[in-house]
Image (cartoon, rainbow, N blue to C red):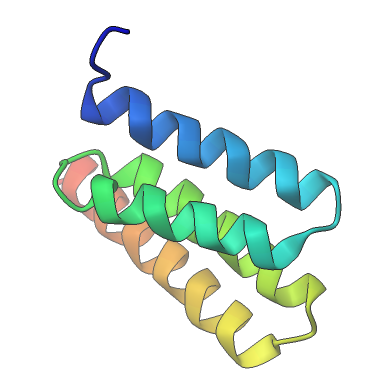
Length: 89
């Protein structure tokens, strides 16, 4: 078996998170997105991080955990705002 790169592992966890979310298994989805974020923190791709935060917010919202959903949506907005500020300087 070939060794996987961190990017492949992160992508796998993100895909699993999306699949679990589509099945309505929000707890497993969140666990996989958290694993993707642990790998993601080593990278500079902020758009991807924002996407994961948004997905986690969606899952918490579907669990009716609105405070956590809001926290992750706010993180998403913060990243997008920072990227826009950087891009349009």
